[in-house]
Image: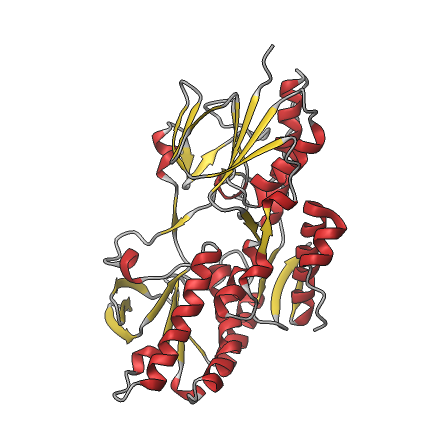
Length: 402
């Protein structure tokens, strides 16, 4: 009997942890495992806002995949998914085609604001290492251009973050702390720089209670972030952003617009006939899709609800729980054993507001300031330990004192 071929597409939190757990749970003769990812590294998405602000070098967020997988058990391919053909169980990549017996989807979302003209052309996003580095370099380029220009363009020093959410708030907190550093480097007065946040709804942090949101807003505003609620993005151009608030249109002259709001599903999944719910793939508690029991989904694309029927936020913790269940069930499926269920509970929420400030809700307890940052550092370090043991933790861990 031929060994079943397990293909994992995407090496985000869920995908890479599924691979690491499978290499421990399955013997070489039980299955062939292939991991497909567009880069030769995995990155800590929870650190991207620091990479984009320039407070953490991107290399520190990168983890070489070859350093954490057992290459005698896992075949690693650097490539991108073009299409999934469920009937023939084939995956078309840009450079080759793979056949699978069991498929694990661990890809991430793509940024998008529906109905906003020219957003794709003029807006920046923070979705991976390269985009985070591009944001940082773009901001520094604008500051350098302003400093060296004979005719000054004030829009070069204006930055707009659109969409809010955890990523937007965390990036604003890091960037507002970093702006004085960039200003000193290019001999620019800090008062000339303006950082705006636009949010279409009433809250910049959906899912957080009012006291945490109020603390976060107060912290950011006290440091110079100009927060604009109920702002509907209308248009994004090369040097200005147009939004509507209370029935009136407003314009901000800005050379930098970073979109951290609404996302879109990868069209590959819809074309494959997978059932989508709220832009995610509908799954059973055992992590395989409702339409095909040979396909498992972990991470951002897995639609999961908690014990109250409320959708679980796509956090790293959620992805790791799903990876553990998916890996266990894949091994059980190969061995003809009973599958287990992933029963997500209502998770805590956390957002940092810079190096030494943040907000969190953990087990119904509110946490503010440096304590919230400490919780995040412990969580990030524990993840590194789970992924690569003490060696990876000592190499990539964050042990800085507050």
